[in-house]
Image (cartoon, rainbow, N blue to C red):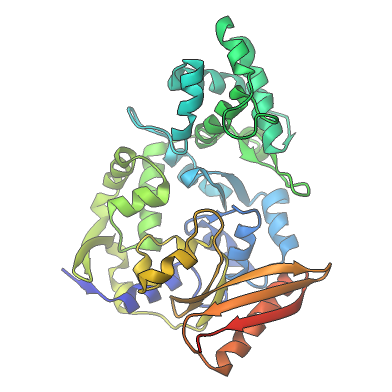
Length: 400
């Protein structure tokens, strides 16, 4: 069994994540389609694309997403908003449809509402699927409004004794803004997204809009979730291999049963390798690329905190020192990562300063010298310009 080194894995992943060199605007569908780009917090996908295609402006990104609709945003893996090529909707949506006896992704939290309503998950989802066509031809501003609008549509279809409970204040933390029904709808929107019933529209200020897939794309999503699931597994292994089924389950945010079912659909395309003495899998088609690393023309990167490259589940590849992992991967919002040749060597944050400025704070975990500080400042200047800002200040902390 082939033994792969940490260095080989880093170089391979930099290349397949399109971080080995600067890519052109014409490459955007392939770049975004590698494994999708999370857009939580809002704007995360723009930072990720900028790091791969720095020549693409924010205006151009919005044009591809909102006007040309080459790209599409919808809830996908882990229930998070994801931007991906519209042509690959089945891979990033239909693939996630739960099989018989499998819980749907991101729906575990609905249990509180179901217990209160004394209702069955599948029955409630079926009712919601029946009313979702009312979203055709509509554009609803804000997630709160979407939840409550659909909850109102569902009300007449509920048993009469459930309707008063449905309209009670939510038990999930925003009782002044959300009803129990709105909370239930919020969880059920993920399955509806995978079924091609709801997508994100254009963003207005701080609020997203929502409509149906049919309205946004002009046609319904034709699902073939078995083939789509096999494709998604291959995408995952291409971007994150060597990997294991459990790592895939965590990345997808699905049940172990669903993840292993999907994994098996692409098993014939995999082969085992050894990483630090442990067994993992790669795509057989990628074998030669691990042994022949391409040229690396970009050694230093300022990645956003939720960049796809940081979604590697074997964190020791990115940073061998486990004591530093909690500084990189937080429970809520991650800082940005300073990456050198595939290793995270520090973290960074940026905050607005006045109307036109961005201030950066960077923390390096080892002394790197003046040259790298100058390069970090240049990267900060370029990122600030991409965001339409000037560099208002930069602090780089190194150990003494």
